[in-house]
Length: 514
Image (cartoon, rainbow, N blue to C red):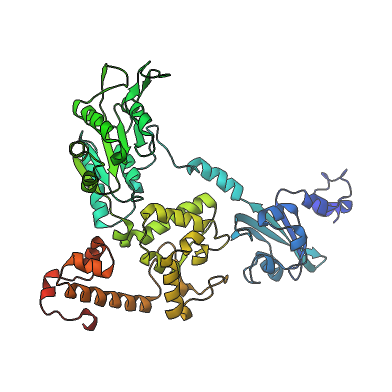
């Protein structure tokens, strides 16, 4: 390559060295940008280390292979082959792909044809990696750790995802009660979102600029809990210092007493007095300190069960449960399951750099049939674990699920049924490419593609529930026991299939024959 071909301005090039003797491959090797040089067939002749860093490959692996082999492209979709076939440059082409290690690469590619005389002998490709820049920019606006307000909260009601009527009713009740001085008690099974609700209530209230403090009453030893709540006075016990408790620290704001029924009964009496008088005394002091706080508490059973067990004082419940809000379990919110699943997939896509855009039909069917004892917390845990295993796959599959989860009897039973009755509908889950009909497209279409199987399952369920209710003469409690499901779930199914309980003492046509 002569100097005058590089610098046509003869005035500029008068004293230029003979660039034909420059080893350009050494220059390209030192580039920060990726460089690929191919011959006229697309076979790679040069591949620098910067390109290897982008692709998670070594130059030794790439050399001698066609670009279409490395990037899983065809001659029509490869920009290198397009350039060679047309003999024209391809400039600033955006190329978004996954490396073999599952890393997302966001690149801008420019390819130029190489000629010797009039004969095209190859192409040179320049690749600029925007992934690092993208992560740097995103980190400014999407922190890796959730946003935490100065008041100590990171959740608002916009984080409460779901269309279930009872869940929406809980949100409405919480919003209505957030600005009153009355105490709120949240009750629901573990993992139903009580902490999220408590923080959202504070964030939605006029106290939002003041402190939100949460304490898990089950996590602190009994001998330390009183001092943590009410504070200590110097000399109250050996080594005691003047220290404000959580009540004082939360003054003007909100105090969340999680699992309040785990608090010792004796301490519950002191808590009751503090709530009644709106004053506290530090341990070892006679001085009373006025407090102005919103109290939110929670129990994982119903308050009445806690009172019956003797773990919650009746009179304390009257103070704490002025506004009582129940959070439904995930089993009672089947219409929200897929939306929550996608929420956690998107969250992990951002945090882990994955690009899952589909869910295997098998996963969807199993999620719909699993009883979720850990509720939303369990779903989030399962999704995060699976997302760590997807690698470069764009579909969440049963093979990605935690061994602990897939070892459950429910999973084994479900996969056994599926493989026996629906195996022809499912291709090998380890294959790289699958027909669209076996997956659910993200984000707009979450419908189950196996409509015929779903129809059969729905009709079978209707008949079984109908027969159980008929045998129990409309008694929902007895029918639920007979079916082995909760009363709440059976009520949901009755509503879903528009059954009328009063009709089960009369002659009713079988829904399966209608």
